[in-house]
Image (tube, one colour):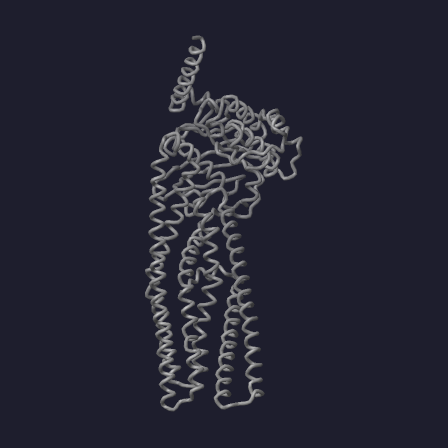
Length: 579
């Protein structure tokens, strides 16, 4: 079973397969030399030869034994080198692919699935390359070498042995189709179980709050049971096919031995027959080992196809153009995630090089999709996105990203020191610059009291409040000093003080930067130079806050509704305080 797509992943490492096969062939010849010396020594003993006559076969046998020892070590070294290079190269390629996918994650690569395939999957594929492939090519060559050596001794026995040899690959082929389906399901169940477990761990707090942990527990148990069943099917298939191959191998060797012994009874050379008896099993051992490695190969090949799915995932197209102007335009953009339902329809927007532009609308109207298009995660189905007057697909991603900062409600904070998080944005950042940025977001005092820039932030900001996390993310982006700042619901689910700090910085940034704010709360965008109100994937209204309020359309209606709700909430709070 050879997969040309998986072979293509080897690249320059293919030479180690050739080296391994060549070493295995030399090892086979050394084994035959040892066997021939034993048979010759038996002949000498039968003829009553003197002690001196045993020196030559003993010396040759010793050389062959030493050669066999060295070749075995060399073969293992070639295989280990092949495996190490393959694992290193594949992990580097998979990681590089994820980087090239950029801010977009592949729908074929969930977090758990990518982790499992990138770790255990590549280990299994390593066995496919370092164990199965060398054994495959060696198994195709070894029986013919043995046949060529045995034919002069007894052509009938040699023919019998070579004829029985193909029965092993026939048995392998017989189970290969079934095995492919089993192993495909095996990896599917494995990654699915990992996805459910990781999802449950990440959402453990919510499961406890809603008392849904028992149902999730049952779901995990169900997934684990499905994985157990498919694992048992794999084991049953392996044991059954191994039994079949043993019957063929030892049955064929037995038939050859019987024919060799029969030849002696018909006047054949007994010492030639002894040689044939000793090497008969050698005809079958290479393919028998191949059959054992076949199951490892199938598992590795299934993992390899998962890796290929990641490596072949469609990447956003980028060019090599340098972006000099940070202005952005969406020109009649129509976009669909699944190719069926349009999320955006004929959307045209303009974001000047400086100023405060807002995109608002109810949930599901397409606001965040606009951010994905601006960030280069996706490409428009119709129309286009231009950055600095250049189609985004012709721009260099490095050039565009050097000008772009996206601060969202889920901006990730790394489990490192405050200083290390700032160094991601600016490697040579000084403590003075860090504190200057922290002052702007009203976090300087907090960081000083908590140990300064060496304070370790827990994973995803677990040891600071949601508002502090958002302000820290903003401070890191301020240090980066980008030309375009996109705030995608950056004030969602945080306290009023943190919201006010972020919006004050937004307004200040807009004096010299291209600032785009995505928000469901219209009070945050009152000061915007231009507001795009979206509904059902279209731009319904456009203008300043005053212009849209004067228009008296959907924006004005939503603004008044939100304002009434907020004032009513505040009024209730004041009434409770008076009581």
